[in-house]
Image (cartoon, rainbow, N blue to C red; front, side):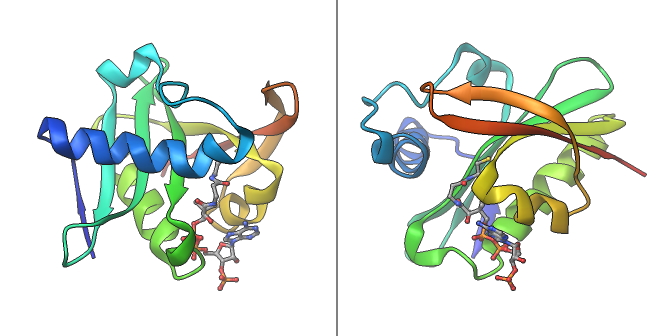
Length: 144
Ligand SMILES: CC(C)(COP(=O)(O)OP(=O)(O)OC[C@H]1O[C@@H](n2cnc3c(N)ncnc32)[C@H](O)[C@@H]1OP(=O)(O)O)[C@@H](O)C(=O)NCCC(=O)NCCS
């Protein structure tokens, strides 16, 4: 399983399709709802298997020159809990370090709190509420 940046229009299409399938479709949200204007200025990483299928996606953008934010982490259902999310998160963190971040923030769904805690993120307070029903918790990790 490789971690690469999507490059071609076709790769971006598959990248957004997985983001939608995992993070939007279960809540009956339309295609397009998985994107936001910051996608233009973000680093996108994806996991690709040896048959060129995308099995995981995640995004990094900067809120300030020292603060990076990770969003839209999604691993294909068939591949969850196999360590792939951890690999992708670590790759996004190392990219954040390379780009000069001192800390990373994220808004975690309550179901994913354990995952981020395991990776050294601490709860800072309430995050946003998505579609009026998915509560998020703001978490932060200081980078060494
Ligand atoms: C959350 C997510 C990105 C984690 O990726 P993953 O590949 O499944 O996670 P990993 O296998 O790398 O997990 C490593 C460890 O994190 C913890 N963990 C993972 N998912 C967890 C969860 N949903 N709840 C609690 N702990 C979790 C476990 O300790 C796990 O180790 P274990 O399986 O040996 O117990 C992935 O499950 C996912 O896409 N979930 C649905 C979408 C989502 O919630 N995205 C996050 C939005 S904020």
